[in-house]
Image (cartoon, rainbow over the protein chains, first blue to last red):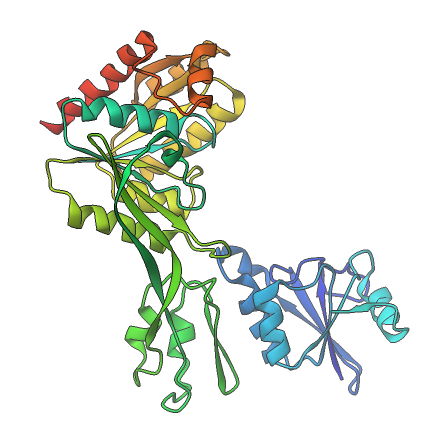
Length: 112
Length: 285
């Protein structure tokens, strides 16, 4: 499984970014290869409209199976994620990426 | 001549000024007042007109024709609003994000994104004495005010001649809806009030009209309710005239609350509105 996190930084110790469409980074953890990679999403600041669908499309390109985030995506982004077959877990905004991953494994996060 | 009455901050008196100014102009000129605050039109509360016409308004949004699409991706590349998204072999369209600009539809090499009508609101035209009144109202749930505003201005162009003064009661703020209105105006009146919030948003509104290169002037409403020195100083340094100051007066609030015209009953208001009228008529020539 490929698990993506909305995050404020580039490592396991970074805080989860509560926003979806305008998240600073995506951290992508490939469980089978045990690799973590960071994807900068900050250029989305320049977009006045449609940040949600645009970011959801990026997540699709990153081939994520699961998204772990804070507040959860808005309606338009959720429609893209649903079509892309990405499972969404919310409520991780007070966690680091590491803590959020553990909470997800322990099924403590809410499925969107 | 198209005159936009705008403000920046909401609740400074755009509608009060629009309705009263329209009535004053109607004493000697052909005038149409258009309420272009389509998300929250309220000029109609002050006018009791006989209906002239009424109609549903549609905006056009693209619909994906899967059978002819080659998935070239041009549509999503050209959409500035991310209203068209390609996901593997699917094209997704988000009507709430679409600005009806036709770009994706026009540039699609296989014509696989025909534009389809979607109801967005109503346009009503009525006549109260000598005032023609046009009001557009966006349907609940619709997010885009701009296409309805654009169609309403088009309606005015089709139904009224060059010698009819067109007054636009604008939406508040400095975002797309008010820009659509100001873009189509020859002259902008910015209504402000002597409060920190009123002053702050006036500065944003002035920046907006300067960016759009439109001549503008300021009207201070509720004059006397707070210090106006900063506003006057700012207008002076920005090279924008303060056309009139409408006094802060309980009688005005009472008439407003009753849905009545003010300038006919409060002489000071008539005097101030005459200044605005004369300024506009001078520009007209």
